[in-house]
Length: 380
Ligand SMILES: Cc1ncc(COP(=O)(O)O)c(C=O)c1O
Image (tube, rainbow, N blue to C red; front, side):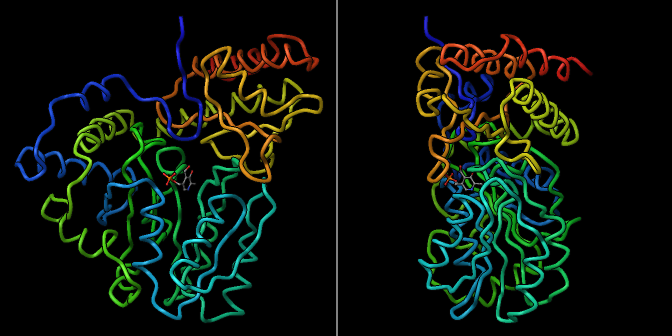
């Protein structure tokens, strides 16, 4: 018998009740029934993003909303500051380049968080910077960034905004958009939102909407102003991924029922247990100082073939974990715990890790990691 499990930081596993909902006969997106669903989604997303403002939904992967956050916020001749501490930080730079926006990179060692002081200095020394583009959680390295502190710095300028790719942050840990003064927050469906890939989200502050007003970069599908006007009528501008919207209504209900605090606590517990297991096994975290609760990046120990380990997870147990990307390829594996995951899911994946490491000749006592995890997971 073969069972499959996703422990990759997107796509993630899906709740069966949501899968069933999405399998229902499709409705038309201009029907009152869909408008009702849309209206519920708008409220649910405001709760999730902790904002009073509209959260726009696009039928695209997360990168679509990232692209929109460049093409809708900036204008020709504007300069951007880009935090580059991993694959997704690099993406901000690539999008800026595609739109002819000059960007200043703040390069951060992979596995570490950006120091807000570096952003402060850059903003001070270059008044032409209009936006700071960063991640909340850099999925390629498993690092959490100090978004609140960065926002405090950007907030002191009327003519600068902070744009946060929170694709593996929203619904994982606390990112209160309005309370922290974040200007743009981006997310995607295939992460903590417990849906298949295909929806991206963008929430904008009033300050960011002023940037939209003056933006003169080319845009068509990802047109934030047009989408805002449609959303206010419980419509999307173009044909949306209807079944995903139906699923989203369900997963937002689940999140509201658990409550944001409960959601964040659960992620904290799963992440702490995974990290404790890793350490108990004598392994090292790739992001030891500021790990994200979305996923745990583990350094491959000497003598173990990292790519083979990832293959064996799938071959032997049907488990997909993520390998390292680019310069981290073969050096780390990434185990996700964002979205539809519960305590025993982590026991399973840690147990699989132990069995595989044992088989690959890594020396430790079987059960050490599971025990360390259980000690955390059993505490209410
Ligand atoms: C932090 C972060 N940003 C951006 C993306 C890109 O999203 P997508 O692959 O949905 O376009 C991802 C996806 O893994 C991500 O984790």
